[in-house]
Structures are given as structure tokens and as C-alpha cells.
Length: 132
Image 1: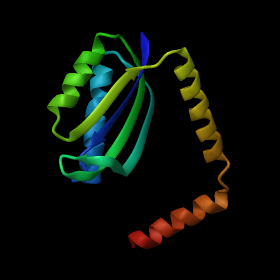
Image 2: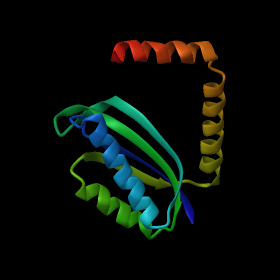
Image 3: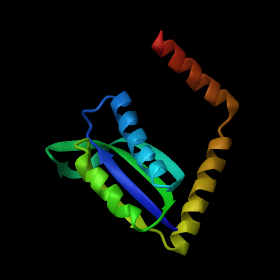
Image 4: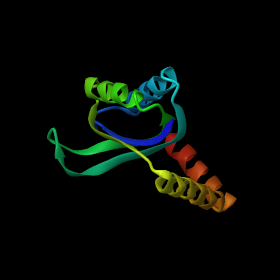
């Protein structure tokens, strides 16, 4: 099994539920084909470097996974068939890229754990007030 990383961009006209449904679909494809999902990051709505299909923004998603090389062709076909995906890129990680990805995840987790509890509570309260 090789380590792979794929980034795909979903069209910005989707609601949050539709975007999450599309992400779940691709996670299901990974599970069906015995690929092991190592990391998933939803980067959210971001500006594109250049317009794609007359759209200037898109929902970015990143998957890091371990899979057999034959699976990548199936994943590419799934991305191409889904009209919600406007761009995708999958590539194999060498041992140095795998080490870097693990280091990046650890640093990100450490930074998240260093956020003071008061800040987290204040944000949660602000969200509750906004929802009501």
C-alpha cells in the first residue's frame, strides 16, 4: 500500500449539507475499496487562483489515505463523474512527504490544544447567541 494525498474542490453553489454529503460519498468510496483514511481536512470556502467554470470560489477538501495503486484510477473516475467536483488532484507521497504530513498534523493538533479554554467557551457562547 502507498500513501496518497488528494485535494478536491467542490462547486461553491452547494449548501453545507450538500457539501458534507459529497465528502461522505468520497469517504465511502475509500472505505469500499479497502483504502485507509489517515487524515481528512475540510478547508472550507476559499478563493480560486483563477476562475473555473465561471466560479471564483470553491469548497476545498483534503484526504490523506493509504491504498493500492490500482484504486487511484477508480477514484479519478468517481471524481470525474461527480458534477459537484470542479477540480481534483491525487498524488503519491514519498517517505519524506509522509514524515512532513505527520509532523504537520502533530503541530496542528498541538496548536489546537494550546487554545485557552476561556477562548473556546467565548466562541461557543457567541455562536449560541447568534443562533438564537
